[in-house]
Image (cartoon, rainbow, N blue to C red):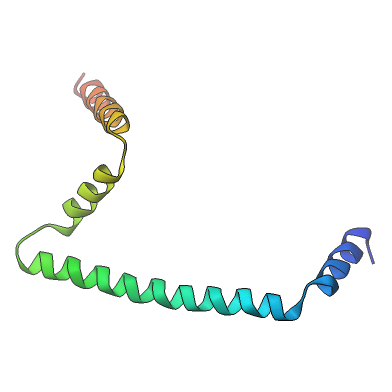
Length: 88
């Protein structure tokens, strides 16, 4: 058995099984909640689409709104630079 395997085995033995179980159960619950929230988000996009809105554009709007103003300006500037380079 290598030294690393021995260290790993020793670390596992020193972990409280109750503590590990608690972490795993919390993560499982959060994963379930994340899945439920994902379903809600899809429903809202579907509803918006049925009202004539474009979900793809809405996702871009959400991304832009979450960015710092300076980062938005920088991204727009780079985009314009790239587009101008392609026209040449």
